[in-house]
Image 1 (spheres, protein in one colour):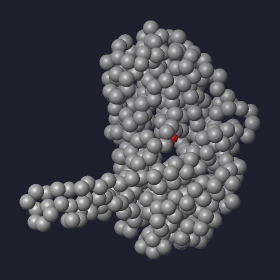
Image 2: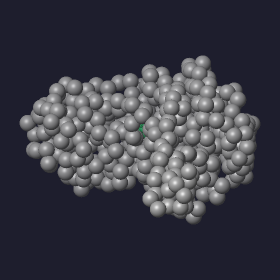
Image 3: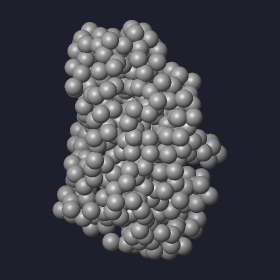
Image 4: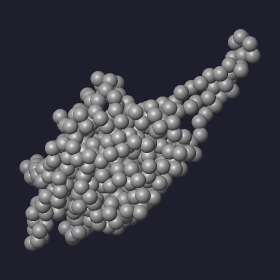
Length: 477
Ligand SMILES: O=C(O)C(=O)/C=C/C=C/O
């Protein structure tokens, strides 16, 4: 499958081709067309025609049937999607097969259920003294926003693309999606599945390319776009917001994080070690929800840190960074940590495999300690397999340390004292707090962050609310 744009119901490779490289060994595995400003404009116009035409005339039942057909279409080509996701990202196959692709199917099915079953409110109103009966009926209906731009990242390419496309379509919008230039393949397969599902031309459009001064910016700055949904780095979010300001375009942002883990002395230590190993090193730390700061109550600090470092040193089947540039950025933080005075307890460099992977973008899972809260390594998002560990003494200090960050996306709390869990979790400045678990997901729950970690929430009715406008109708009766 060759990455291609999908505009107004047709596939096209228009635009300058740029190389697609395997993060596993650096080999060129294909080329990707860079969408020009004209191609992006054509996609936005096609989306507008669809939402003002056949797609805008669909009922919620019809749209939910399309979503279910898309889910079935992904499922029918499951192995192709897994192979494409692994090829673009280098992530372990079992991760793509158990998380990325099943969740994409789940995203379409859950939003088909949620959108179909979504009630609206009505209020029988009495207004004493109002002319006539003094009575009215107020009810709410929802209108789609119109043309929605979706900008999705390279870490969970299909999961995060469909996490926005499914609710946007369910709510009746037409979509123009721009996936990361690093991971075009499953997005193109999704366009093939959507094409086969028979959605009206222009309901879903896909353009490939880079961000700044390229396809991404052409799309987010386009006056024909009615809303922007983006997952990615906070700095990019700021740039998109500047573009959106010109037309007061609403934005939904799921941005960066510097997620803390709090390990209390009463935690099940093995569970806390295993859980923090997963939350720090799954997909080599390239998940916005990953842990990069670990705070451990002093009585169990040495035992926990020694166990975590040993397990980190023992990791073997991990994947690479997405690109040479990202690998270099992560390694620059490994060097910075040492320059800032950190002790390296595990990793800190580049693994030597003695095979083709030595041409890829691998870095070692890394655990560092000994830095103050003011260190850049403790404040800035690395987005790689590194966590900093530090001790704390009491609950208030733990919460203060956790909240001492410009970010606020997710957190984990490890404790067997449930009163403590219910005291601490709501005090953490984050959108999601997991207790004695990590990344356990219910798609109906609010998902997103505070501070520099984003604007708004996704998931369940939160996404459907963002992708639609409530209209209150008041009828005098
Ligand atoms: O698990 C999810 O629903 C999700 O959206 C994960 C986002 C990760 C971002 O890097």
